[in-house]
Length: 416
Image 1 (spheres, helix red, strand yellow):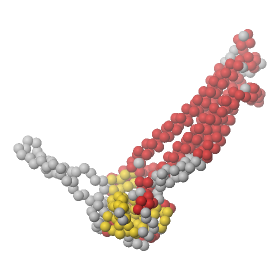
Image 2 (cartoon, rainbow, N blue to C red):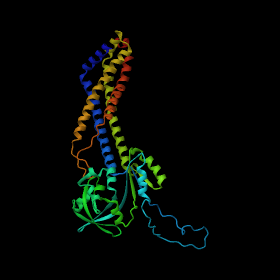
Image 3 (cartoon, rainbow, N blue to C red):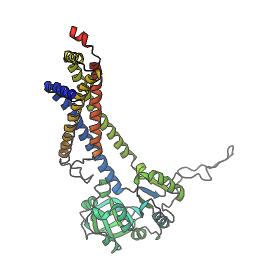
Image 4 (cartoon, rainbow, N blue to C red):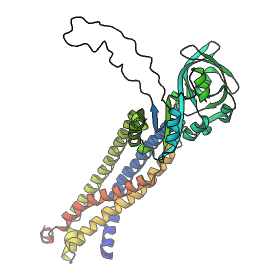
């Protein structure tokens, strides 16, 4: 084996340029694989974390369904006369979850549930001088909401405890506060679609890093919104849940929907479009990366074929000296695996260095996401995958030429 290794390395050193080209091909392929998969999965993780930071794992609410058939629609066939009513106005159906607070309390006892927050949400107008903006007012149990979405860490001004200390305290999104030129301590008048007015005081400003939330949403106490809307203390429209394992949300949502007979929407269903984009990005990333590695493998295959063609006489002499076909095969496999190992090692280092560099590049999302630089995922699994795939590719690239070399007839080569 020692002699086989010595012959293999001697041949590689005699062809330094070809060896370097083959190694650089693997290095480039592995480096680009690590960079692309780290960058793309980093984006997916950032978007998923941002999405889940503001989205419940399961949302329970009263789904408004299509108008039910009335007695006028139930006309028997063959009737001589009938009344036809056009443009029937829909029924004023309540949107609340009946016994919502009791359901929330029951859900807190479930072993798979991490937290529960009953809510009452209403569309409102924010009035500040001549400015009037459309937005939403969410009445919550603020401490429970903090357990679910960690509101405290998202505050850029004020405290969540100040909401509890005031009957008209308001936590306002940073984008909305900027549009209204608001700061902590300022007062704003809100009006509901039914014309109810309420003077509120901004006691805190939060930032989720998602423009669709920061630009429209405000939080206050649940009883405050109930009073504004003229509802009783049991009136809630939504129940938000966080689970210990959010990948079980779809299965658990189906169970709760049958149990409580209300619409239970899991986070995967609510964000299906975003999740599809995650899958497509991953497919593109792996396809391009594997293509790079396969191209590098073909480069090694061509180089090994050329080497065998150039070393025909050397191979014949080795076999004439007593080397078996398996020994010759080992010589060329050692060369291919050495190229793969060196290319993988340098490729992983190149990929890591490029990933660190990309992770320092400033990026302005325009306030849509809370990020200052490009996100990078340094998961060790992708480095292991890259290394294994590199070795496997170079092994296959060297296997077929080495089999060909092992079958060379030394008598025919020496005779010319």
